[in-house]
Amino acid sequence: MADITDFEVIHFVDEIIRPMAEDFRALKAEVDSATNKWFEGINAKVPNDAGSILQDDRASGGVSRLSGADITNFITQMLAYQTQLNQSGVAGVISKPCVRAMTVLD
Image 1 (spheres, rainbow, N blue to C red):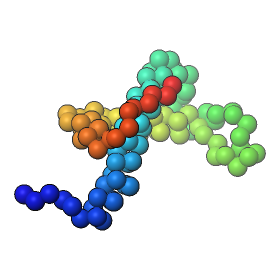
Image 2 (image 1 turned 60 degrees about the vertical axis):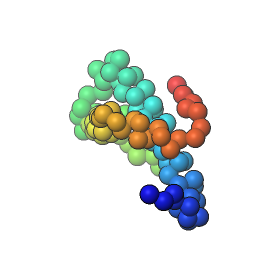
Image 3 (image 1 turned 30 degrees about the vertical axis):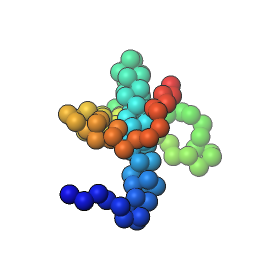
């Protein structure tokens, strides 16, 4: 097999693939942290109910109001994403193109 030397391909990998891989890796860490916090007790405080509205006083600023159901539905999507990323070999595929060291935010 011949090496890949095409400038357009190299540019695509350096400018799109590698940064996106780093974003995916960082997002996985954020999702892991968020779901851990959720299951440490926050989940027990949020009813999965469309009638229970989060009172964060942000609606006047144009921020959408969230119900308990909205919050738990989002958590469900985070868990689906987490399941996908936790499949065998996926972390290696995502980490391989990464250039920078992983920075963990809490």
